[in-house]
Image (cartoon, rainbow, N blue to C red; front, top):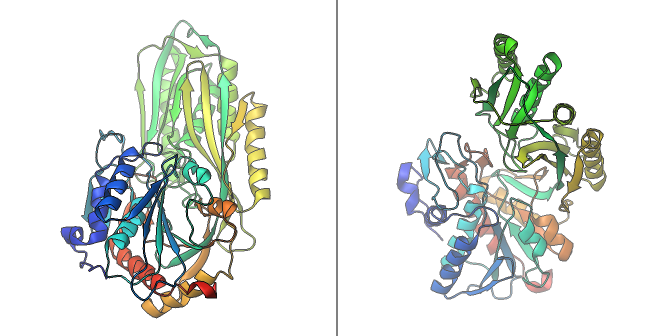
Length: 493
């Protein structure tokens, strides 16, 4: 068994799991740019004399034979994705295509300096590598499946061919709460709305201000959608709605959010107004900021508001399109759409107003929708589409990904629950999550797969506040090894 350190301060780096995580953190691996981490996996397999296969999109499979006495056990697939969400604090200089992540230990948690940590799903990758490297463990045949581009659309899992791996049991290591066994997840789609506008010169006698809202908590648009965190795009739209209702304003620029699966932490706009209202707009902004701070008291304690004068813009959006855009952003639903009627506390359906971008003479708005049911997904997608269609936007959406319907009769689940209870003296929580996992796509091609998802505790995923609870890594590791020791013989499945 891999020896575990006591996880105090920097002593964790002598632990093989954290050692592999440190190595992974040196490798840039944004979604869609996984070439360097794939090269690392290839070198790892070669150095440990393990068979490796890489498919056309970069999904990587490393095989390890059974240990002595376990050769008749079912083949188990250990699966994690190699890409990470790349978010940073506004004041941090960091190039995710070149710069390493800088993890550090603080009060029992592993964090990163100013950026996402990449524990989602780097710690899962590290656990699998530690398992592949240790020849003292007891287990049946293992297939280690590393998928690409999970965070930006699960395209690696979508492209995975059914015969790429052979195992009948799959353990996904992308769950973010130790003590829970995940047996189901939401499906989702990403919707894209484009407003084409005619550029216009600003009227004579107008002045220009930039409004910035940032340093919100952000977070995962699935896991954190029910926590009441503020959405920077919605807050900005609220203020712009006030301005355009009171003044003959013009919208010159707008930008907000970054990733489709992250609650936006920042948004900004440049607006033009008649010079007579210079003082009025600042009073309006101060009142607005005070109201927002009161509304999100104890939730968004770090929120920052800035209004500053800026140089004259050469063009603005035409007023009709500006108003249509602002009203649609203001009115579109954001957050929890419906709670589950079957599983208490589970979000059934949600939508996240993820990003706003200006591209040439157009504004592109991206929103992501999730649901535990096909009907719920269709319902929320239709609602969001209708809002933007009424405002004159062009509508497009991704193919989406299927949910993972819970199977409470799963054989691997029947093994995992008593194993956890024996190890730790408490029964694990068996639950479904509102976030998306690749498991639904695996089932699409291999409906016979028996799956669960486990992992250590990660908070703040998809934001620079992402942190990994160090002690839960050892618990998840011990749990994983105990499951592998109890995988049944082939003939019993």
